[in-house]
Length: 179
Image (cartoon, rainbow, N blue to C red; front, side, top):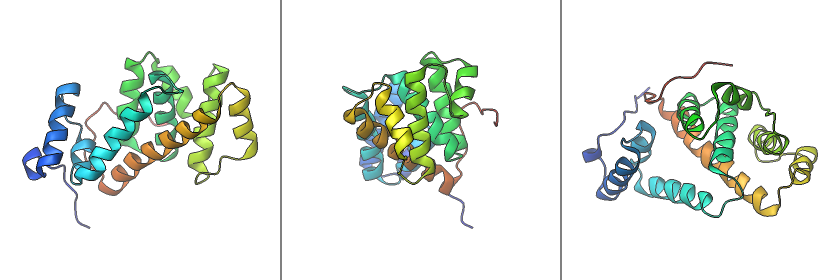
């Protein structure tokens, strides 16, 4: 099988180079996954725009979005995204124990637990969460806007999970323990 490599910026088209320069200024580095997605400037641009858009006027805090990212990446068994989003979740205030609890599909705070379980169910069931999990999410205080945004977050994270699954590029974040 052909090995997919992480491209250097100068191997990418000018639009991807420009986008990645902005990422580097913001993050201080270019994650290997972003560089690899940069093989397609359209995919890179749409991923980052979706990420930004879902953070603006969101039903979920940055911390809650990281919990969703963690459970989706766990279900999809994406070691790259688990490593990246565990690091980010810790920057957002979760402890190591919290991240492990989330990855197991539960959380001690009821409202966030409902969101985690819905994201897990959507990911496990090819989009169809099931009535009980969906009803629990809505009863926890979330609304239709939150449902649509959570579904978009699942799709976005699944995209990055799938890119890693098909490239197996080197993980450039601290590895996480298996559960």
